[in-house]
Image (cartoon, rainbow, N blue to C red; front, side, top):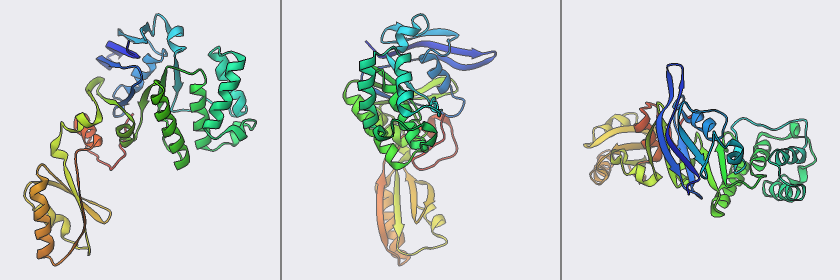
Amino acid sequence: MNAIEVSHLSKHFGTLKALDDISFSVSEGETFGFLGPNGAGKTTTIRILTGISAPTSGTATIFGKDIIRDTIASRKQMGIVHETSNIYDDLTAWQNLMFTAELYTVGKHEREQRGRELLETFGLLERRNDKVHGFSKGMKRRLTLAMGLVNNPRLLFLDEPTSGLDVQSNLIIRDVIRDLNSHGVTVFLTTHNIEEANLACDRVAIINHGRIAAINSPERLKKTIQSAQSIEVAFDVPSPGRLEALKQIQTVSEVRKEGDKFRLFTEDPSSVIPAIMDYAKAGNTKVLSMTTFGPSLEDVFIKLTGLGIRTKGVSTVD
């Protein structure tokens, strides 16, 4: 049985088709990434899968239970960590956690034991009796994730779990995601950081204009666009005309300056590498470093969504 099964799901807002006949499944124990640009239909999909919104047509099931006809039973099996905080600032960390556990009808002994374990995992046990309004953003995010796990869910929805957090909180949350996955918990992850999806997810779906543009493992998606191979090179001395000169190398389709390095995109790295060395020798300069890169998940995302802005490691998606 799949953790999530979506079949011909559509959602209309008047004449606007937010979702247009999408179908996909998420296996039990899988970490599944869901990416899409602003307005693509990602948020609408999540709202339907978590029982907040009803589809115009089609079905969605959680461990075989229809999310619309059997919402309560479906939601008991899931934890939800929204991008926006659902914490009560005037309550303590412990009170927030216990209140959430009671909403899920977790028994007193179990919720207290589970609460202590989670607060210790997220480095918050010593602050359990402090009111949350004094917590940092990272601490609040960790508490939110603890609240999403207090009912020991089989399926966890994570909406931008590491967005804007400090390094410590990022590392803790990523370790928890890996640990959950190793214990068979299904994770449905949305993130602005495409590299995070690349590292964390077994499979990734890219949604655009309300339709699934692609769905596969990150590595298999990358193999669909070999034209995005690139070479990163650094020289020992700067030169004002270097960018234009590198663009003249045959089979190079694009050159970008990235800090003190240059990134050359090509379908044929083997012919470009000696050409770079010849250029350096002719200009009496030395190559300090040279690294080849295959296509990235970000390159796939940009190609499939038609976005014209490229960044390294992070793209704006919603």
